[in-house]
Amino acid sequence: MELCDLDAWTLSSMLQEGKTTSRRITESVLHRLEEREPVTNAFITVTRDLALAHADRADERIRSGKRRSPLDGIPVALKDNLCTRGTPTTCGSRILEGYVPPYDATAVQRILEAGCVPVGKTNLDEFAMGSSTENSAAGPSRNPHDPERVTGGSSGGSAAAVASGETIVALGSDTGGSVRQPAAYCGVCGIKPTYGRISRYGLVAFASSLDQIGCLGRTVKDCALVLNAVCGHDRKDSTSAAFPVPDFLEAVGRGLDGVRIGVPTEYFVEGLDAGIRARIEEALSAMERGGASVEEVSLPHTPYAVAAYYLIATAEASSNLARYDGVRYGLRANAQDGGAIQMYERTRSEGFCREVKRRILLGTYVLSAGYYDAYYLKAQSVRTLIKRDFDEVFRKVDCLVTPVSPCLPFRLGEKTEDPLTMYLVDIYTVSPNLAGLPAMSVPCGKVEGLPVGLQIIGKPFDEETVLSVAEGYGQAAEQD
Ligand code: GLN
Image (cartoon, rainbow, N blue to C red; front, side, top):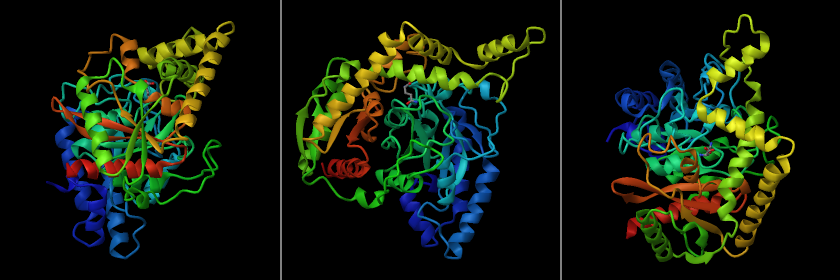
């Protein structure tokens, strides 16, 4: 076991007790990164020198008793759709080639203020559109548990980096499952908090009403530590919530006693892998033995969630991505005689991948006159119904437990030719985004040697229950 294999909490106390230094931890992470990167392709940019400089400054603070937070000196990896001042931010797209943001995203600024050491920018599906990290101009990431398989997506690089010791914690983004599903596929923890909990300022927009930044780590506690650092109101994001932020670390230890868990029947239907179902059922039994009560509940509009998500997300994306015109950012295609229109056309044709273009077309279509009511407005109504389903069940239960994905990490290339099959992978993760709810993925054993994820969905702004149930589950499972 090397330093890079330990969790942030353990490393934090070692740092505090003077048993190691941030430089040693960072060197261990960078060494592992060099070793594994040829296989995982988890990073688009590695900021080696920056990391070492930050590590030395953290050591200086810790030595002089000026530790900024428990995360001071701990390596973090940042998804490459988070703006980082002075470090390229590509969103996994050719169209942002050469773009270096002049500012840090608020979440980045806060994690750095907490003392974290930035090791680099992680791979993702282009503009976070995908479920496998195969839609990246930087090539696909590969699952550390089996390099022939996908990491999940779109925060696949962040998840793979945490899983393989190429970082200790990471930030990702989650519009329809992009933190939780790769966390599940790579066997790590990942939480998407309530919409509004973390400022989206400086997160490159995909679908603004669904996007949330999320945290990945090896343990529930590590996710709580990162949440503590990045959550909270921000004037620069009008959708960020002016709610008080609790100490999430304190919530982690509350246990399962008396917690009422709901299991939505609609999530355990045809299409769910039998092995995954078995793991989730075992987990529910463990939670019952740990003191929770489990009851079946119904979320009747679940069958419409994927359709509603892919209408709303593409509509918002078509509008958000209109800004990449070759004028203001990154790539500009050569169009000597054709004038501006040809320049736009070529830049966008050459700059975006097929999936992104598909979504821009879909989104433009559903927003166009004549189709707006039939598709976009309908999808918005379904969104309201989905939200109401959750409101209803949360009168009876404290949280919901479901699978994260209906299938195991699939093989590279297996679903790329069939977008609909790829979209269906998101069946269990999109609803919390449509309803704005916090949701977390925690490891829940393996099937055929591949990790399985358990999803815990909470009430709005009740990340505390999500975290305490996640930790309680881990402890109950250990006792079995
Ligand atoms: N897989 C979903 C999609 O392709 C979700 C992506 C995300 O959460 N960013 O849209």
